Image (tube, rainbow, N blue to C red):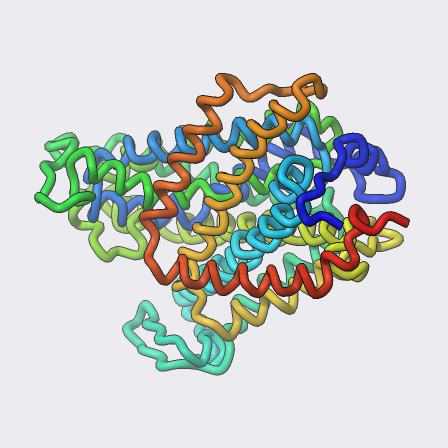
Length: 482
């Protein structure tokens, strides 16, 4: 038995054609684009923009978004080739299995838990914070013990400080609700996601259109503030550091590839979904940040958790303040929906390969969704969201995502060498330049993350390696046929 044994492309394509007894193909190209937009537009647009402008790039945060988008585009082009070539659920896990062998596939599958499960938990906590803000506007206040984890300090909008509660019930509620929706069916989940995407994109466009009239062009001078003498503090290095910050606002476009087995026409739909959502979000991000830094001087966003609301207050359109919070809630909801869906599909595929217990790949007789996996992550993610202050795990989400991007970029080059004649509905252009550029940029961003993130990554991966050699290797269907 070899831990480096790869899964033949013919076997993967055979699995993709088993739609009548597996996952149901219900997602159109339009739904896949909405899935990507749903995963991307969230916390990044509404909070990270202000941080990047105040601390790093000034009004040139727009250039930071462009630079980050270029890094994502390199990885996205590689994802698109794989997704059109291997239209199977599982994303980077599946691609690694076909190119770098079982052990690397396990590593990346285990790593994706950091992106999807912990990402959903983190967003769940943020969602609960904005819900409290919305309820406060209607003079509704939940019991303090039920809105905060035991190890968390929370300051409410009215100044009340809560030094640890019992559980973050709103976060558990939204995670549970979305998990149950995913059990009901992918088509129904996609329909809800499409509605949420329309709501938040509409509010983003309203912000841009109405805010444009109130832009004070003096706020753009200087457009690129002079460097303070410290790397990353304004100047061109500040634009680069800002890109490192706002890069995480793009996390999620890869989740489109986890739904490949549920796409109606994956060869066409996967590239459209991945690259289309990336282009749309980049355009919205650049316009949004341009208006935001034009309404208020960039340095006023320092330490501001709600920069979009701060900027829009200048316009005098007070009625839209509530609309902004609703849009943010919609944004967070769709992000969690896509992350929970992506996580369940990765574990579903790993279970089908024998690397995880059969429990994770059982399909519901009526809904044809991996319902037991959804229930497992309902509990797992709810525990993190309800009981742990997971905001400090944000860097773990990022480092896990970047590692996935690196392996996919490597995988494209390996596959071109090993299977040059294999049919590809979409080909990554300028190979090896594009994948190498993706690897360099992603590694550079990983390097910029704190040492604590690397330590947690090592611990998490060590646990994963232990599980692989205790269970996965012995039960692998590829290494133990029949």
